Length: 367
Ligand code: ADP
Ligand code: MG
Image (tube, rainbow, N blue to C red; front, side, top):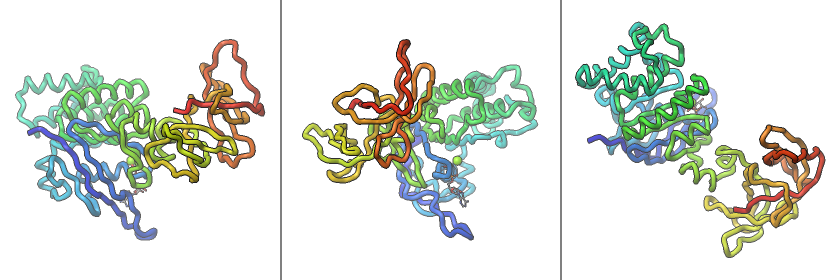
């Protein structure tokens, strides 16, 4: 029976700090991952991502709540049970070189994992190992080199191969590619995703790189202060963010403050912003009530310069020429806006730049 379903039920993790009192690193975490699903975990530093990872690999036990792997409560496992089930749950951290045997070769390190834990035949083992060495771009010329003599990036790739060779049910990765250069990172994320999908490994992938989160996952979970802020497909998070935090975290967003005046029959809302009335699609998550303050979320690419039906007055306070685009920073005159909105417009040959200080009408597509 090869499964890999993870259920996290009401998990809390409280740390007792001698001087500052209790600290809730995780509050009321509930999560269901299907077999073979890949979930990216994003959030600022200190939001509890690594704490959750530590609970899942049994380094720590939660203060309360349960974690089930295929229906079995792993928070009850003791040292012996963990040893017995070690192959099922594997982890790779930002610097996993410590998991390797420094005196042995790259090949031996990967083979060692297999010999200890499975009973594959030697020839079959070799093919399997070489396939993975290809996937992590390890030069065959380096396979007999002692790990100690390899660079940090090479060591990390050996560590990844060592974990993938075991075909775990659950694979936990906490910023595994952060120490690699940009080009290799791109290659590795495609390879890890390919192997994860091919083998149907359930995967939790902690990263602060948004592009990585988008390519590595079926769903994204955004954490904030030890809580799950929102969980959904990348598209759901982008199109219907539950909170201003998520709106600004997934992609860039202008959060235009206003008040909801009315909701129309077609489900669109009318929001007044500094006395100007604007029409926009209502979010489905946590929609405000009529009369309440509301945020209008407009992506920089969706804020244009032409006057249209949904137009409002802005003043240009700064401009950044980015080659193919110009990023204008704009402010609504006489508003208590705290930071300028960003308006990203394509720069086409023949168009000029607009001077700082100019007042003009901005518009957006209300969908
Ligand atoms: P992230 O990985 O999202 O950056 P972490 O899960 O590592 O965040 O940490 C969450 C918070 O819990 C941090 O503020 C950290 O200082 C705190 N924390 C982690 N471990 C302990 C501990 N053993 N005792 C006290 N506080 C801790
Ligand atoms: Mg961390």
